[in-house]
Image (cartoon, rainbow, N blue to C red):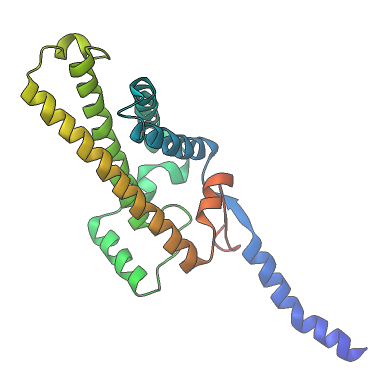
Amino acid sequence: MNTSITKFDDDAPDAQQGQVQQKQVTVWDPLVRIFHWSLVSAFFIAYFTEDDLLDLHVYAGYVVAGLLVFRLTWGLVGSRHARFTDFVKRPREVWAYLKSIVGQHPRRYLGHNPAGGAMIIALLSSLVLVTISGIVIYSIEESAGPLGASLSGVSEFWEDVVEELHEFFSNATLVLVFFHVTGVLIASLQHKENLVKSMVNGRKPVEDDAA
C-alpha cells in the first residue's frame, strides 16, 4: 500500500503540469477570425475568376476591399492582439526573430510574432494595391465602378500599365500567402501547437504565469 501511495505522489506533479499546459485563453476575437477566413475565400475567388467570370471577380474584389477597410480600422481600435501596436515591430526585431527560427529557439508569442506581424503588413499592403488597381482597371475597361465616369477616357498606354500592376500585385499576394502558410506550419511545429486551429476557435494554450 505504501508503495502505491508513493507512486501516486510522484506522478502528481506531472499530472498538474499537464493541466497547466492544457490551459487556454482567447487570443483571436470572432471578428478577426471571420475577417481572416472571409479574406482567404474572397481573394481566391477573385484570383481564379478574372478572365471567365468577370461579375463574380468584381464582387469578390469589392468584398476584399470592404474587409480591408474593416481590418485597417480594427487594427487601431480592436481587441488587444488584433491591434497593430501588438505585433508591428521594428525591422531589427523582425530580423532577429527570423534568425532565432533558423537557430531553432524562437520565442513564443500569444499573438503574432515579429515575423508574422511583418507578413500581415505585407499582405495587407499588397491587397490594398491589388484592390486599388482593380478598381481603376475596371473603371477604364468597363466604364463602371466608383471611378467609371472619370476614367473612361484614359489612354491605352495607362490601361496597360494599370493592368500589369494589378496582375503583378495579385501574383505577389499569392506568393506572400505561400510564405505565410509556410511560416504558420514552421511555427506550429517548433512550438508544438496547431495555429490553424487557433484561427478557427480563437484559443491558444498558455501557462498559468503567462495568462
